[in-house]
Picture 1: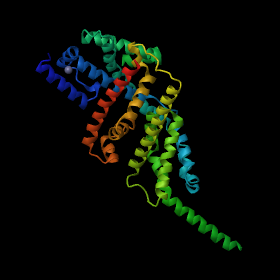
Picture 2 (picture 1 turned 90 degrees about the horizontal axis):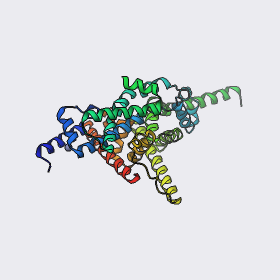
Picture 3 (picture 1 turned 30 degrees about the vertical axis):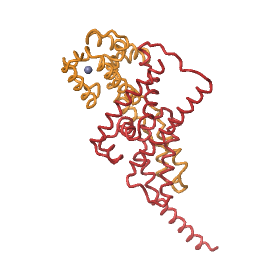
Picture 4 (picture 1 turned 120 degrees about the vertical axis):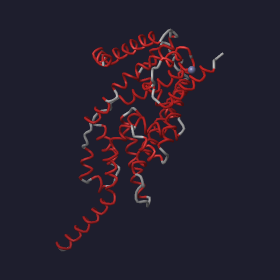
Length: 163
Length: 193
Ligand SMILES: [Zn+2]
């Protein structure tokens, strides 16, 4: 039977999950102990971490640098002749956003690395081997590092995980 | 026709064109100001550059028609273009999903049995597709917030301004959306496993 203290902690953790992102959850001792002891909260965290991670992945995928210009060209083509021929339209057809875009994507690389560590929770739950937080961190990190090494190359993975 | 008459006509034509340009120039200004942000948002919703161009074009076509329908221009152009673009993108996403389901049914194929190997979740492409499918399933009021806040990366103030809700409500909707996305994605995983 679940104790009232445990229930309170569940509620507190649920509230924290709503207010903060997984990466910002404080790793206090009560939280670590509670996660280790409460399968429902483990599942809860795992599911939200998965959404967090997927969102970060979406944000870190670059499109081709000429996409804004191509999008503008296709949109300008359906406008009235007077607009199509204006100097402003010409400028929009040649828009260059590669630098800004790369910067925006790059901003997600570190959060991605941080979120990746959270995804470890999912891994451990699936493996069913959560014995302690230390164990969880070690296995999670190495699995995620392995993932990056496999998909992005060892050099890139080293860069992310040594940060 | 004398040369002077032709010149006057040319001047009048030019003046007319310029006045038309003036009255519609705000469409290009909207493209200049909001276009890059819209492309980013559309790319994240759709993950396909051809679809991005389609949704983007449709948005500005709607905007041009808005003016032709007798209305001058939307009160809040940013709200109009972002909401129209997001709605168009979600329609494209849903249409594609329906087509895929239909093809699966036609071919009488079942989803491939996936191993319960934990690294399946680390398949970036699969995870992103699952998230996109889950976003398309959200109720509109939650979806709008998560798309504008998380995919377009607008501030809560901008989101609230676009959707006509308070920033506090936008935060609550965002939390609900994430919880629901987590549940939808978990349910989908159970089906495919
Ligand atoms: Zn709990």
